[in-house]
Image (cartoon, rainbow, N blue to C red; front, top):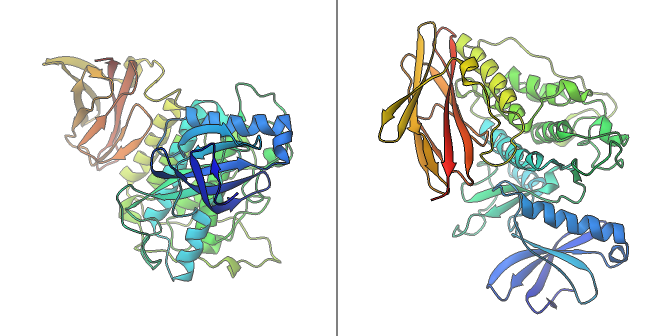
Length: 445
């Protein structure tokens, strides 16, 4: 099909990916003068009504998820040969699997910022998908795509720098195996990629949001060790020798064979990893273990925590952030947060004039105040600030579940009308913690 123009608009220039069911082409949208990706269902599968419907549903689900961490869909159509196709943003810099391979070959090292960058993208994508009651079921290196930021220079020559450049954006794609929990029964097909699928998915049992948490944890193990965990969720613990022990603990929890023992949400998973990678504890770089480092004839042992000096307030901060994120739970939609009893949090609010309100909470000697507008305008930025007092460290939790540590302010841009909450969790130097919640609402201009 290379060289042909689909529906008089999309010129197919090159193949950028092939699979068992579809082919992805680099194409040019001649109407908008833009490069795009066109995914075309294989001709033999186009005759199968079930496969056609699954392919079309992938486009619909991607289109419904409004997140910068999920690949964007521009169009859905059918070729002259009755093959459904999806038009998406072009991942012009390949996928994570190929990037990591080039990074290793050039002598690059995975640093904590790399691990956190990948984890943040995955957590953001999964939070958006789970809000729509969609489970991805195939979070793998090949389904994490890299694209250049508009206006950025050509691809840099691979070298020992950071894994993902500042001129690039990582997005999650390929919802071909995704499952809509709102429509699904408790039984599912045994699908997925070996090494990244949890036990319940491999045997065709019921899946849920924690299914993706397992895959996300396996992805980070692969990133560090060069291979995913085995079927028992084990990996070569020696590869984590230079990393904070709390990182291995977080991944071990995410890889539990029992779904109920994993993190309840992708946001909770991300929060624990952020706390584990606290800047004061990070090594400068951690070498990427070569894929051949593990003995294929010996099942690797699961890593166990090693003792290290951690400030008491950091431990408390990690615990409190995890609790708060559990309360936030799966986001029901961008900026749609369930009502909570502010009295239970100990927050006191007061009107300070000019449309601003303050929220204050205390615990022992620690008092924290945050200030911001009581009424926000949809699609307009609003700023919330903190008076940290004796706080040693703090973390904002935005209405969308995103966490921003130690920032003096938080910018919020509501996308729809409704109630919202801005939360701040603070700790002092002796380990005291406090949570303050500022309630607000968004309305149309």
